Length: 359
Image (cartoon, helix red, strand yellow):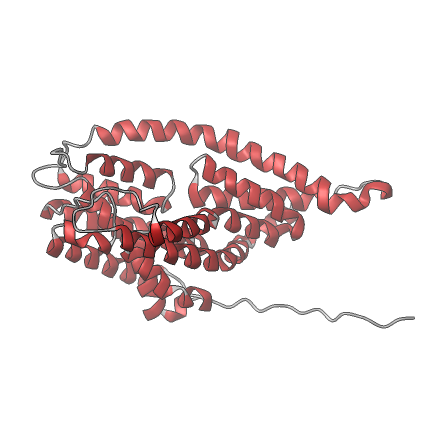
């Protein structure tokens, strides 16, 4: 029990290990996909798809793989922080299962912790000397993978699927509701899990209504608040990391420009690394800033005629009000970070003396 308490007490350290390894994957994949999105976008496009041909197709394929690996890498290195190398395999597999069941980066955090804890305790089981050599490379990863898979697929995946089905119907029924309320709710949903299940429900509902006459209220496209909410967390995180340097690690500050670029191109996953590093504070900051911006967008009748988000869609939006609401959301985001986010403290590595004398 003491081991478990110590592991949970150091949860932030384990999350930061996952984040530090995930950031290069996020930046590499995200920037390439962002360039593909820009090359695919034009002033009359209303499709959510990125071109699969030519240079844009090549970049989207490569970048898409990078973005797809974010959660498995996050999960793997959270687990590795807890259990060292035996945690990597169950962490990677668990992270991919989290993606498959639609649990997003929050599912990746769960699988990373479960895989790491399972591997940590399995390592302690005494085995006969004849099979001891198989423990780290076979027995522990195999059993930890089974445990992690059961947790994410059965205990998380099934309830998640039921919740999504309910939310899809509920959100669809809100298309005729007050624009301010719809903007606030969809903005918060987009920001909650940054590409996860709630985000996907809100986005897919908005995308399906693009080009129709269905409006959330008087003259407000359902997609308007969603489109700008998509870009507020990554742009806000990037700006905050550059102006509030004491509150972010060096790796997070280095990734700031990349996060801003991803946000401008409608890739909300650019904020995942910042959110994972401090989920207790950053998830509410994401949601509050996007909910307020979404509500204002609803009140102003902001629309977005492309099934996409970010600033790259400005030509097919109500440009002035769309941009204004985005700036307001980013400003709120940075202000909330300044108020609630603690200063980052670099953890000192303890280097043990190694006795290499021979007797």
